Length: 171
Image (cartoon, rainbow, N blue to C red; front, side):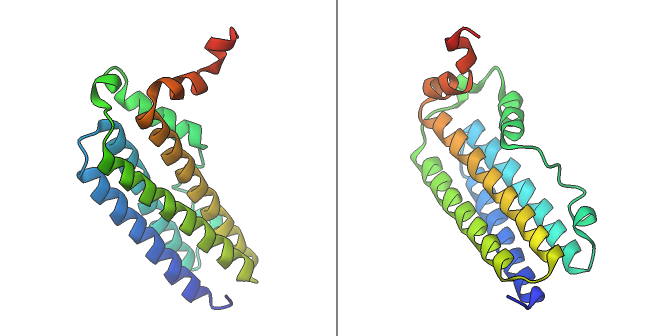
């Protein structure tokens, strides 16, 4: 896609769609983990919108993404879990509506990743390519966070076993 403004418009639409989905889902659940996760990702979508708008105004990639802390998935997941520490087991119960919202969110993250991958491949502008690669990484992180928290919601014991493997292994 040689028309960078059309690519930017698509990216903004995708991020706005994500923000709306996450906020609606967060507001519709009583599950504290689900709400915290969805709100955290919604906040990241706002960061992406701001970055895309900055990039569209000619701000370079480093400046456009300066407010987005490039932490990995485990950092965000740990931050969400720490926020809920102490009350998590009492608050987390399976919720079919929340699970459906997570599955829709996972599909949205996949679609966002694929869109940015396509825009990256079609762009000849090196800065645009780097920007779309950055967004691909962000969407991948969101997918991992959603996958991990959905796994926790469905089977907390197994989640702890996988996450805290060093305890089981004696390390």
